[in-house]
Length: 419
Image (cartoon, rainbow, N blue to C red; front, side):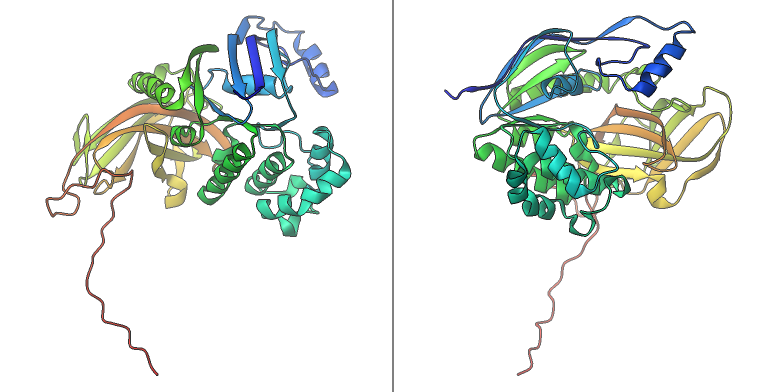
């Protein structure tokens, strides 16, 4: 049996609402915190983690899954020594490299090259050791042209590529990766997964948090399920994911207006979601038939909002995105939105094969880089019944998740090769 890489015993983390958390406070935060005490501060305690314990062995890939607010990110920050724990013990056997949030461990005023050396120093590497890996880091991140530019001028994608490359190539004994991989494009995500598999193949340890359950199942040997800060189960990844999916399907049937795990400014809130099939109310949709998704919303202030974007993401129960329906990509931003109403998304000839899906709702002003108004992940469950998309009487093959598109086949004329 391999040696231990991580041991957590009775890990608990308490936050006091209304106070700066973590024990590390900037001067500006200290001043703002002092001024805020002139008014009444909510001092209720919130336990983000309670009595969580587990062990991970060297060379193992360990997944952590759970709902938003279950304590996953807090746990990884404790393991990375970013946030101190309130109670319990954590033993780390080796050097830790962490990719927790875009920007963690990077100084915005320094160039990409300077941040590579800074992170190497944080990990305890000598400058010569970082120099030997420098070209490989830059090549993987695909930022050669901008490596001597301050990272504050990087796009989020460039920032993420460099941050992951640094974390993965400076050879930590334990690599901790949070949800940030979802920021990158598909090609980069696949590249990162390949790199993490190489890390474990070299005998190092990976702790992985993601809502993409298919990636967790593919990559992780074992997994742990957290719920409201408590450990619910631990074991083989497939069994843990099956238990998690059962809980997701329960949550997806909840009244959206009562969901308290949503994110965003709250200036707009989704209240309900309804389905229409061929123009009539329906509990399910059907492959190849016209679908409508109706989103009931409310602006709590009673004011009208301008330039609002809406999105519905439809995913498999394992988290693989099948459709991303977004007003921005259609050029249909709502210029003037009344305080209460219904937004409708029409999908002609629904291209989803029969099965169970999960829908997430999003509203923003200014696109994904602007103000997020409301984001309800896994807001509702969707059942799609089998239908004759191609008009041939043939159903879609169930071998892998795929959307359906019209296409034709014929026998092409042989190419004429001149001699």
